[in-house]
Image (cartoon, rainbow, N blue to C red):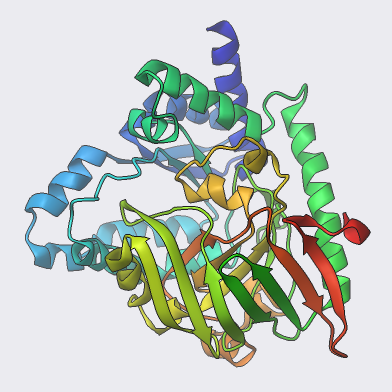
Length: 413
C-alpha cells in the first residue's frame, strides 16, 4: 500500500511537471470524473507545490451524464452552456493550462440512441470551437492522463475480481508511463529524444506518400508539401514544452486531405460516444470515405462521419511500432489514449495546424488550400499490427521501407 501511494504521488507529479509543465503563477484547469477524486486531489496538491496560482476543477459524473441522455428533452442536446464557453475561452486567452483526467466507462452509453449522443457531441464541438482551436494550435499547454474505474478495469480484465482488476490496471498505467523507472521525469526526457530522432529522419526524407499493406489494408496516403513530423512533446506560444498525451509512443503528421486512396481496416476496438466500435473498415477515394463497414457500432460510426464534411477525411497519420511497451503488454485497453500508442493509427477529422510549415498562422481556408483537413472532430483509430508494412514514396517514385512486420525497418530503427 505504501508503494502504491508513492506511485500515485509520482504519477500526479509527472502529470504536472512533465505533462503540463506548469509554470509559476499559471492557472491549471482540470477536467475530471468524480471517480477520480483521490487522484485529482494529488494533482491539485502537486500543481500548487510547483507554483500554480489557481487550480480549477471541472467535474463530470457518469451517472449524471447517463441520466441526461435518458430523460432530458432532445432539444436540450443541441445546447451547450454559454457560461462555460466564455470561461474556457477566457482561461485560454489568459494562458491557463488544461489537463483532462479521463476515467473511462467503455460502454456507458451503449443503450442510448447514437443520434442523441452525436447531437450532444456536435453541439459541444461547435460551441467550444475557439477553445479547441487554441489546443489544436498548441497555443496553450494541455495533457491527457487516465485513472481506472471499476467498469473500465472489468472490461480490460474480465476474469478478475473488481479489486484485482483495478489493481492490475493501475499497474499497467504506472508501467506504460515509466513510473517504474528510477527517475520517471528523466525517463520521459530520454523517450522523447528517441522519438524526436525518428521525426527528424522523416522530416529530412519529406516523402510524398506512405503506402500501407496489411490484412484488410491496402492504402496510399499522400502527404502535403511542407508537412512536419512531430514527436511526443509540444511547445506552446510562450515557448514552454508540454506532453499532450501520457502515455505516448508516436511520431505523427498530417495527410493530404484529398490524397487518401484505398481501404484500411481497424486492428483494435474504438471507444467513441460511449460505445465500442469493433472490426470496422473504411474505403477512401480522393481522400473521402466512400464506404464503411463495422461488425459492432456501425450506427455510431456513421454518426461520426456525418459530423461535418471534414469528418469523412483524415487529419492525422501516426507511426507506432508494434514492439512499443503498450503493445507488448498484450492488453487491449478499450481506450484510445492507450490503444493508439500500441499501434499505428490515423484520425478522422481535423489536422493539427502545426504539422505543416506555417500552419499555426494560417486561416482554416488557407490550411485547406495547403492540403490540411478541417473539421469539428478528431478521432483516432488503430490500424497497426505485427503484419503491417509501410513504405515511404519519394518524389522520384523510389520506395523506402519504413515499417516491416509492424516495426521500424532495420535501416532506421
